[in-house]
Image (cartoon, rainbow, N blue to C red; front, side, top):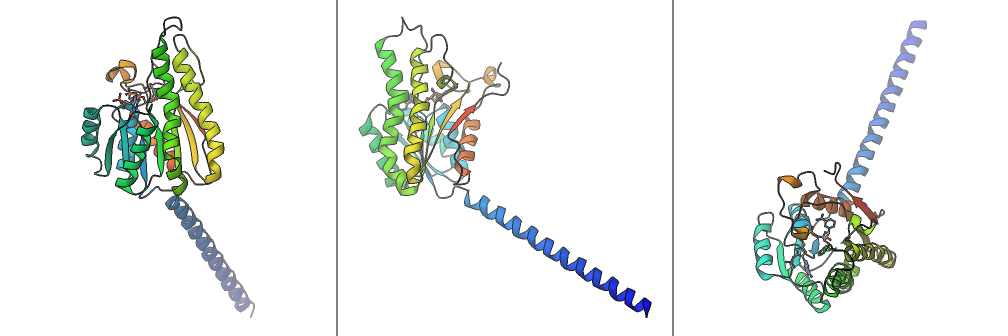
Length: 276
Ligand SMILES: NC(=O)c1ccc[n+]([C@@H]2O[C@H](COP(=O)([O-])OP(=O)(O)OC[C@H]3O[C@@H](n4cnc5c(N)ncnc54)[C@H](OP(=O)(O)O)[C@@H]3O)[C@@H](O)[C@H]2O)c1
């Protein structure tokens, strides 16, 4: 009798353990599905980006990574030959690419660029205001023309690009990203015009972020350190291998776009791990 009771008790304990194990497994599976669902929701699919200054350097790197990840890309530059060459090169990654001749210093030209993008791809989800240039001279030697070139391209240009695209971004609850620089937080010798423009981009994007999030449009300003590009007459080579590479900028942008809708990285400093 005692033996029978012990056996019954053992079996009941075994059954309880098995039931608990099944409940535990079911919970694990539910958790796994939940995370998969979140990940899936945050993947940008069938989306369209417009990148200013995409013929080379950072803009080209961002275009390449977005195309490789299934995002359609329109990009701009001022010179028709460069735009056509970049479009040809980018077609290696995807056919869903459109090169547009546009100058960010001209609002009408940016409006046309947005119109072409929407006519070709049907919508606009992500705008990356990247076009820019730098002229580095002591303030007493910097000409009015050089000052205006930097302010009109680097600062007024990001406003014009947003102005031209904001109604499309409202429709898609999209994303507006600007490319400032570490020079947008740290001033240096010979940097007056460049510093002024890039400090301006940081302030502009942060204020725009507050205005635009009411429409579920996210905004981020990226502040890169040295990137291996054609900036300021540089010819990228082996000597630039320590720098951030254009595709690193592309991967950063992709990571930002993939983030859960509830989070907003509004300002990002992005630097090389070991400066030369
Ligand atoms: N490289 C760096 O170390 C670094 C660091 C921090 C921030 N940044 C910023 O990153 C951005 C991209 O620079 P990058 O390094 O990639 O330089 P880049 O290799 O010289 O490329 C600049 C791109 O901008 C375009 N562009 C210039 N003026 C334009 C205008 N008015 N309208 C339309 N497109 C224009 C250029 O094309 P066209 O000349 O043919 O028009 C080119 O496609 C700039 O805003 C720069 O300030 C660069």
